[in-house]
Length: 281
Image 1 (cartoon, rainbow, N blue to C red):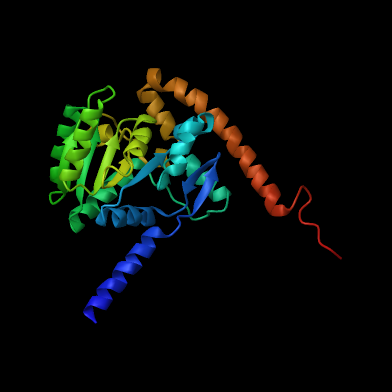
Image 2: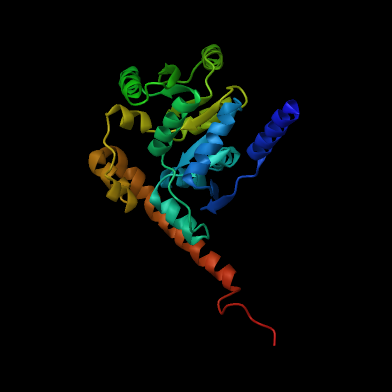
């Protein structure tokens, strides 16, 4: 009877992990339409079984890169989760029918996973950034999450790894027993990297971009009211104008144009045409 109960739970857990995740196409890229806590549950559920998955934390810049680059869009379409990072994505998803959708931002996801990982004993690995950033991260993680099991930290060289070096990295991660691997290599490099290592690294890989630098204190995060107003891009632009002005100038206007087109078309479809649904008499 006990064995049957355990087997039943395993089947139930497996079926939940295989459930199709609802998505909404945002400027032609499917974004996962799940609430914040549900996405964290999904990540930790996969991690418990050491299933090789990868998660992309999407913002306007990432979706526009995918819109212009079919190869990169194919990577995002292959991802197991694409979280809506940034209020513009959340607002658009709400306008497209997901009224309850909330933001699943990189740093919030990072903190929530670390918090819950220390309770469940989930082992975390960190790949990316510099040795200095990783050292600061380790100090802060040790203070804020004293029971977190850090499986390892690696700052890879800023060049393409040789086949031998890459295999050594994969072996190191897998041997560490890591269940979640946070990857901070920048967009789109980290997304391509996770796609290439899907099926090779036995863990859930999560691309978190600038989160390592934010958490380590090398960058400042925008205040909550700025984030909720959808103005985090402006806050970051003021901090790094030389690096970001071109990115934002070339991605935000076309995103707004495409988003407006999508909302109008979606409204048109729901109403059955320009004059609404024609009823038969």
